Amino acid sequence: MILPGAATYGEQLPAYIAAGIGMGLTFSPLSNAVLASVAPADHAKANGTNSTLREIGVALGTAVLTAVFTGANGTLTPSGFAAAAQPAVLVGAAAVALGALLALLLPAGRAPRGIAAPEAEAQAVQHRVTEPVAV
Image 1: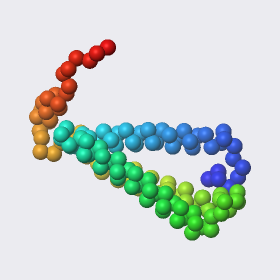
Image 2: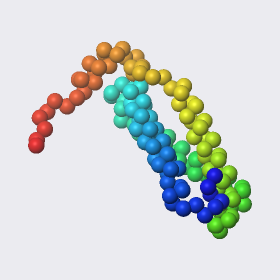
Image 3: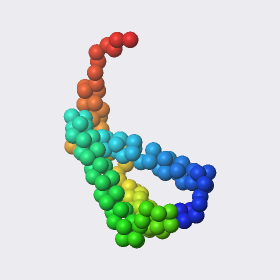
């Protein structure tokens, strides 16, 4: 909403802080949720798949927002940029809101599939390194 004007950094700072907090509240818990839903032996595959899908999402998001910017006759002049960036930012915000609503459908606190909770803990303990650490 502050794009068209000559907004100072101080006016934009709350939005930057909110974006940083939102990313911090998203990326780490998402990785934890992915790893909590698979057996310890599959953590590497799950983490790689999660990272790959996140990168595909970044590329797809960039492509979609660039298409919206270009479709709104965006140019690299101050007024042309601000006018075309507004719909692109609104599309991005709508995508984030949809993602937040879909995140509410994620299951909470479940053991990996096919493993009961006590068995999952026993399996996790078995995979821990028990060698002494040099200090």
